[in-house]
Amino acid sequence: MEEKMSSSEEVSWILWFCGLRGNEFFCEVDEDYIQDKFNLTGLNEQVPHYRQALDMILDLEPDDELEDNQSDLVEQAAEMLYGLIHARYILTNRGLAQMIEKYQQGDFGHCSRVYCENQAVLPIGLSDVPGEAMVKLYCPKCMDVYTPKSSRHHHIDGVYFGTGFPHMLFMVHPELRPPRATNQFVPRLRFNVTKVFHLSLYPIYTRLYGFKIHPMAYHIQQQARTRSASTTRPRTQKQPHYK
Image (tube, rainbow, N blue to C red; front, side, top):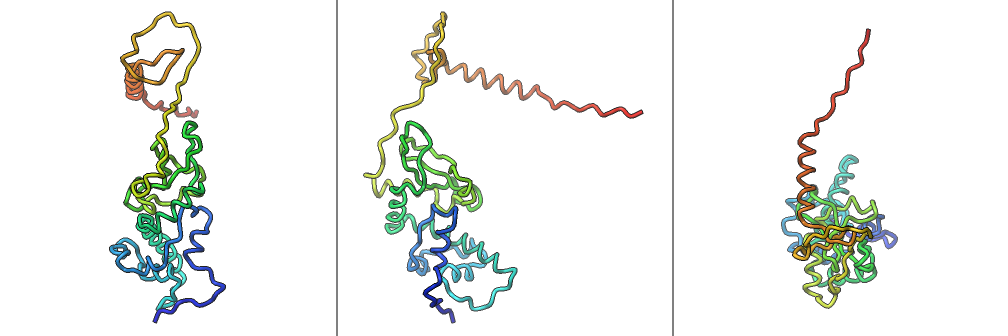
């Protein structure tokens, strides 16, 4: 029979996991949410050692003593299971509230784009398949995604946050959506140019010597790159001649 660990000095597995360096993006999933089997539908087919991993997350004593070589496997399974549960939990009202608090505190970081003016970002996944892509950061101001600056977040699977989390947050709380960034970087160089092209028909922001760059220039550059790649062949090193 499973028994709840009673030691008051023990830190819960969830609190321990969320407190690990690199796991700052996670919120603490309520145990009553995890104990509701409906919320875990289908996860037993995705996570190995599912039963033991769930017991570990809920701080339940396992029915059978784990062997030394199984302990690490169950620990990895518990982290994966918690991440998949977390992706579902943060779409609920309680989960959104916890993530909003972290968002407003800047726990997820800020957009590195200058014209976003230090806008707070949100974690997002680029795939709903485990193991395909690490977590990214979504800026609601420029509506683009970025790689987390710190390498300690590069091990986190994006599936633990899902592809729709930021969009759900702003659907439920539209008042939190910041205004879209209007400023855009326009590079300029001062130089006298005698030949002026008719560029007003091409709304391209990039400029050189004060003039907008014709879209055809990028096409020509791409063609040149393609030709260069096709004609370049790896050089074969001459073998040393031994007498």
